[in-house]
Length: 324
Image 1: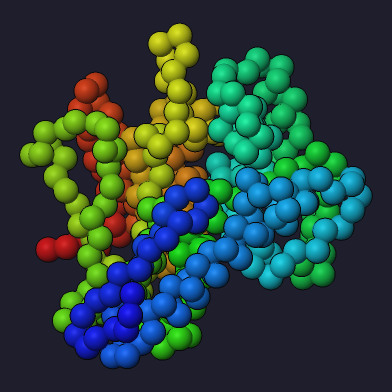
Image 2: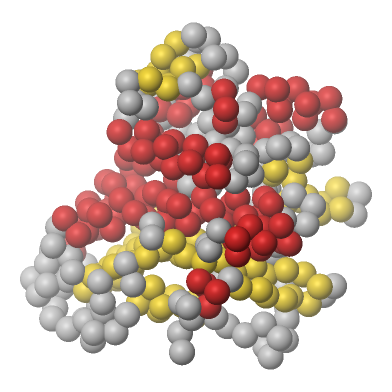
């Protein structure tokens, strides 16, 4: 990396949150790309320091260990993400729940290091009793969070999106006219490319599935000052006695979603909301999620299994973003 040149895109990349990030920028001639890279990494490192359950000294880990009755001070970024998480939890009637941490660990998908397994009904009921977003109590304009005892947050379904938003905001503040930011598959874009064209994003399906091209064509969406996030069951799952268990857990039942779509993609104004809603719609199930998205005018695309084939369904707001 050296300095940006006129009329071209520069590409930067690195690692964060157990995945990779990449940024394409349309920067002014002479922009110091080393400094941009360092600034991007710093933004993402701050998200990890506050919201990673894999880091024992992060704010979210320290909240988990806080004594019952303790009011825990939240950094501004953490409070903003929790605001969004509670908003989506309320609107989705709990299909998205930031207190799902104990259930994630129980099924072996979390940071506790427990093996992936099918827990007993009694174990699930016990952990359901420990969580629930309605138990969250805050004060001081949301900047203090009560630990009532046993409450464990998990923001992994929203933090990457927030990280992408923060990187975009940082780049804008640095005078970068246009950027396409990706953090672990969650995308935030603004501005236009040096050639004047909009950003175009290829939408993910389920890469390990095979479907005829004429049945499930590639979808490219045009993104102008917006975000794209995808949720699905191909990233983390295991099989037990011939049944597949995906990492997408329904916080209301404590079990993996039975009729989860292979993937759900959401386009929204920011990646934080897109990330959270992609998860919520996946949890709702393919049919219910699609009906909810249509009823609430969410820009969403569902890819579902039909035997050994894949099918897709899109809401009208999503179709409006398709490249023509």
